[in-house]
Length: 228
Image 1: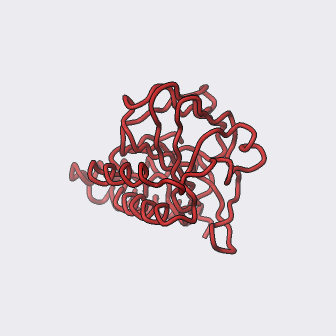
Image 2: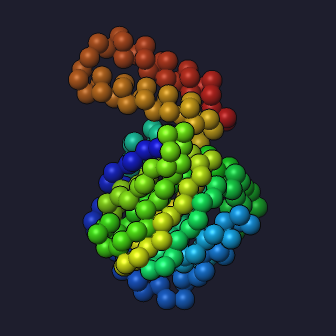
């Protein structure tokens, strides 16, 4: 499921983030610092050191935005979220075609997280830079994604994807992974569609008995498919 989620962060939060990232100084490191063998060969960008104070501060802002976004909860069904990271592409930087690693070690901890869903949250406006499109491949081909600041794209972590070279300006984004309660993408898609339909029925005050039945179907499917 490839999904655009609007308005994860508001203008005030975005302005604060851009200000903090602009003044992050030595907290910016080579993006290959956290890349696996496959990614390191094609990754040419910069990112905020995961252990830095600015990463922790801004990561908490992103997590707060996610917690307040019902569409993210519906689509991702998050069990655990990897601490949000932050990257920067300046002119000439790109990230070649790759697939995200299936399992990541949580920073500063001994346990691991399964990466079911990948997420990119755009932090500056698309007119601020040329190039920098996120291309995500599925059975229908490659989809170019370049969203307004504060908007996010979710996609299966199993997808081949890449970031096109930036030719002007700077592209800023946050990226992270979600371990979902439901690891299968097709099942998550069905649950999301069912949940959104139930919400529309509630908003239109449709047949109450039918809503209860459909809600029961939703939770019984979630119970059947959940990995917990």
